[in-house]
Image (tube, rainbow, N blue to C red; front, side, top):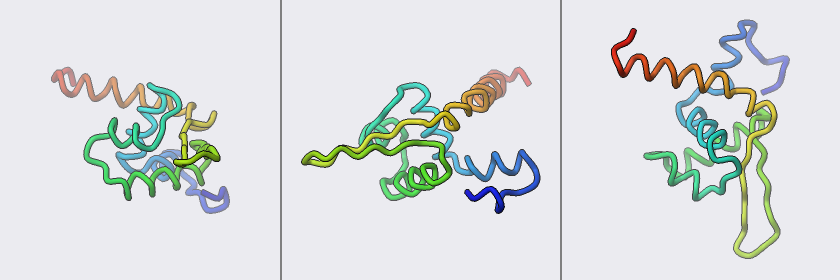
Length: 108
């Protein structure tokens, strides 16, 4: 997303960049497993269609959250990995995990 089009509120900026559950799950899996191929992401993220996964990966690449590496082989090989910006979301994912655990265990 272009910086001049970003909202004023930092919370809104973050939500704009990771606005879908799919993006959060992509980030979660890339943080956990490192570099992954499209098929691996499809298997690790239940119920996501290939079309929706592709759209989210493209959006995240445009926003500088992940790298897409294409290898010149047949059949084509494409790998996805988080950039430094993407990796910096570790604290956000950790906070969501902890809150979800507490909610699940009726601790809040």
